[in-house]
Image 1 (cartoon, rainbow, N blue to C red):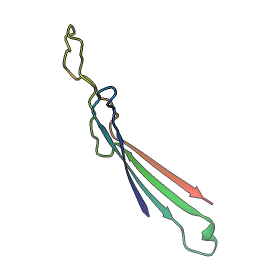
Image 2 (cartoon, rainbow, N blue to C red):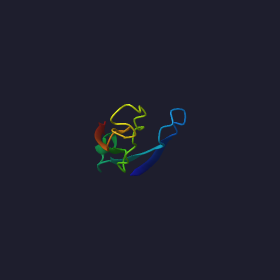
Image 3 (cartoon, rainbow, N blue to C red):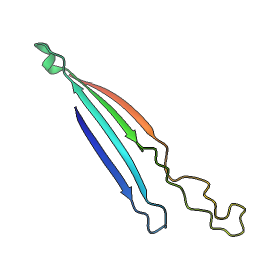
Image 4 (cartoon, one colour):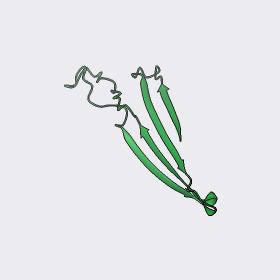
Length: 91
């Protein structure tokens, strides 16, 4: 079994956006059955957590001084946590 832990950090200084620190966590396991003919077959299981710690990255505030929402942050720039499961049988 092996583990992969990776951080993607994007610095958007051009647009003056907040710093994004999104963690992607991947867990993978390989299982091989025992026996004479089983050397040709193995199963792989992958679990991926996108935005693993569910960190919110807020959008920029409204900068239109005539709008009723002036100065408010009404949305976010990233997606919530997403979990992906995959299983592959190799023979």
